[in-house]
Length: 265
Ligand SMILES: Nc1ncnc2c1ncn2[C@@H]1O[C@H](COP(=O)(O)OP(=O)(O)OP(=O)(O)O)[C@@H](O)[C@H]1O
Ligand SMILES: [Mg+2]
Image 1 (tube, helix red, strand yellow):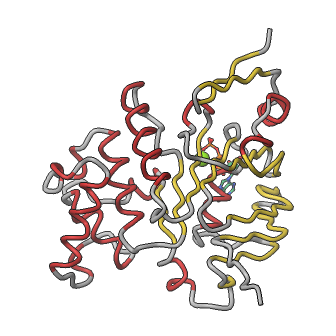
Image 2: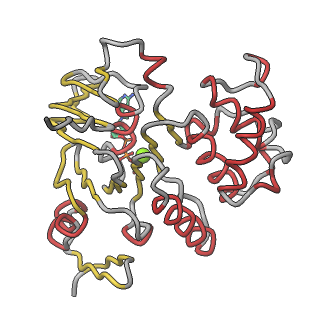
Image 3: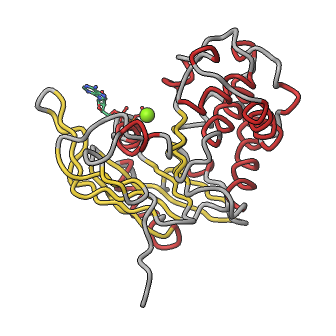
């Protein structure tokens, strides 16, 4: 008897319509255990919308969403959401600037923003501190969240996504607003994270192929709310697909596990 592998995420014929405008259409996408996905696409393609659907913050107008074998609409969404670690600029903006970095991580345990909303024990505090160490910012545990640099804040946010021991991690543009060194350091950290078999299946949204950590093995290209292509990086990340996705004639280079794209000619 073969045991069926339960995908971390399965979207079937997903569509999102707002003000009669389709923001997403005909999205079929499966994230299997152990996979690390990059989602690429131009501004306004629908990347954040798709991630919010996967994070169970946005109900699609059409189609079905399954996270770790549970179907949205059939199970308590708050319990399902607990199994997904999600980081985005919108969520980060809602964290009170005077909260400590450790509390910003720890409060994810209950999907909360303030430590006094729930009670936490020493185990929770220790787990949050350990996750900050894992993300290379253990020394910032007592620092106020609002005083952190953009790069430090992104690391704290990624630590926050891991607090509930989720079965799926979704990161919306963690490399935005970082300088070159900050970006490279974060890419290296994401690389190490992706190499750890204990890290849950992960989806990373970015605009730039240069920001794909070497350990990421799958790519989804989105354009005007529709998939251009999705699958193993070696097959899907081609100059042809990228040119179609960004509506520009592009050339693509691959060197030592990293990617570069530039206008053709
Ligand atoms: N709640 C909403 N109501 C109406 N339109 C929306 C809503 N949320 C997003 N949109 C629109 O949907 C489109 C896709 O937005 P989305 O934020 O998903 O794009 P994105 O690919 O993440 O872009 P970026 O790279 O700039 O972050 C945009 O045109 C946006 O204006
Ligand atoms: Mg976005």
